[in-house]
Image (cartoon, rainbow, N blue to C red; front, side):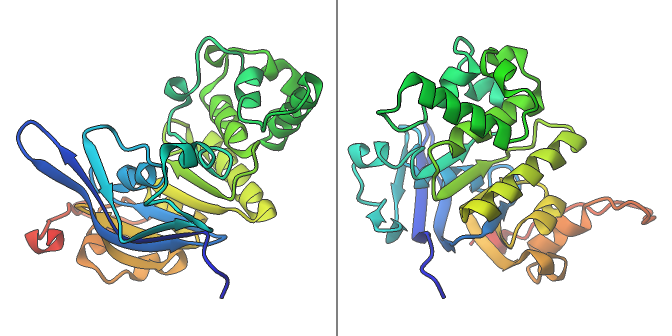
Length: 276
């Protein structure tokens, strides 16, 4: 078995609020290799907090602790901000869920993607690399899109630009936080096909954060199910329908299915013991 790209052991993320401490992530452990690992759960289950903690992007009112948080040879738990500046983007990329809020509205697309390139390239070399990456994410007219501003791009095109920006420095690990939630079904499948192709060809590790169980079951290799800051179950994506934990079973039962007639759609009944 090859060494995983990312190893996390006993990760905790706690936020200080005016009224109390909120433990958003509680003692979770997992690994990510050269594979697609889905992280699913309801809003507030700790999925995004986990992804941001890995890159040390937790807001100022939050604290992160871990027994072990290692990416390749780097100890992320003990890394300084200077260390992280060398990791973010270049070795670990993060795709956020809505390009409207993630892209700089006053910079042209080509210039934003070029910012992620390593220093030392001439302007013409940088332009060539950016155009090649825009083409790789299936943008039909890279030359035209290169000169657009983000507001001139559709949602699907903006998300492809985000993917291009994260992939142009050739990272080893990609954290995708709801990368298709703002897209319609057709464009969503196109973006997923791009991600799948790039991950497979480049041998990347992918952390895919989502609410959509059907999506991760078909797209990912493994699935981590989170509830109240904990990982309550882990399974192969192909075996998600046979999940054992009652929380996962409840999520699956609440999904409507084409061709299946039910008098009532199940709602999730939570057991307080799940949060312990």
